[in-house]
Image: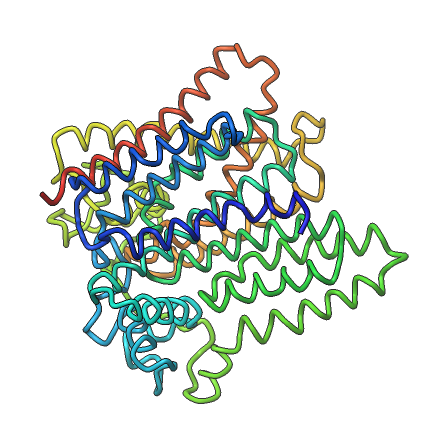
Length: 491
């Protein structure tokens, strides 16, 4: 293993160390940050950084990544496994993602029978297998069962923190400069959707991290094609689909890069075709075996999705243009609101910041800070959409991005949005509009905003300063919102 490889794996080794420390040395069952052990844990981290600041070079990107890890760590420490979850239900109920995980923990095998008969058991099992085995490992060391359950969040914490690290690696491969990397990392390290997902014990986080890994690996493969990289790429895509079938949304963008490489290097066509064959031999069985098994055994349709959520009957025009808003939080009848949110763009935006939660019951200052996050996020959403269109349609070389990378991220961007909009508009329920179905767009948009940042020639211009202030304001407000939330609950 050379020096560069050691650097590449260092962040994941450190995240593994953090996972073991939290699992076996901390109490993860509390539901508040008002605990002395958390304060002293943070103090210890700062002391270590201070002592080693001259020995170990701690770069600005590393500090941003560390801040993101600490934010997500804080979030999972005060968030219970039944709080702000999707289809988890609870342990001991025999259904939901928690029941799925618990069955594998107890029996060390997959559940039998038609997966449609038990809520959430239709999902591909990779996350649940890993979580069940992890619970067995934790229980072996005689941890309290409540702690063993909460430790499942450490897996999702690891996955989401890995997403931020991989985004940094992607930025380096795209040769983003210092300002561009700062912008991209602030977005992915502070984005509230990823913070919430770090504590969500369903299968979203695992599918997301493998999808981002696949994007990184296809960039490496295009630069230097090899069987080693094509196998790793196939395993990543297959694993993303084995965690959640929608992980296959990265496939069109990857296929486009395959075709481009084949066209540009036609004289070596046989080499590429053989690599593509290896890719297919791995990815299709790995990514689709669960669906094929259930189709054969139980005649379960491919991409089966049960009817879920709060149903409504609203004309299409209103689902686009009705933008009434009485709160920055999503409107839900179950939260005491007059109606369930049904405007697709507005719901996508609101759930990207708060998921389904209404945080107004917290401390007095929480909604104020959340409102600042809402405003800055709205500004960045508009800017990122404009920046994405400008970068993808640029023909004058204003933006420093190669054609193959523009093709990769452009097709991925379009694929994600078309898939999300198709699902959201075809389902007359609130749940289908949740931002988590398009969470992969966060690192994609972070990259586009990083490229957009680097294109500013004059970093002293008022437009750049306003843009930088929006990014910084969003990151600070997001972090403050989800830290203050931890102090506003529990005792």
